[in-house]
Image (cartoon, rainbow, N blue to C red):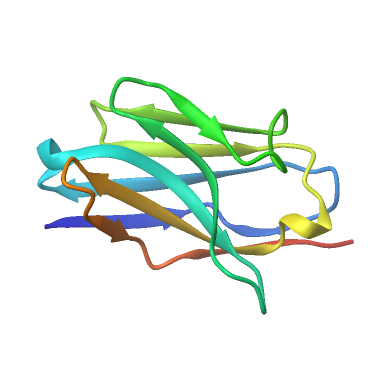
Length: 116
């Protein structure tokens, strides 16, 4: 079992920045990929960014150049630095951990609202 706890969401003005954190605990040796997904009202959950155990990252086209994902293996924590935020980034952001056997764990979600 793996437990994921997100933090760092909140209200920010357009153009602002936020950093999300996801602290993982449990059977971390089984985890390959960690990442962030988001779900806006009325929309499906979508991938934002993900990073492998080896440090290879990929991003949704909509956030490339604005968001940066990083992973501190020693602390079992993954971060999402979000810059130049837009209203369309408003969503609940979920931390995800995928095992080597493609089983997925999810955090409880943290709200990010971009509004003036």
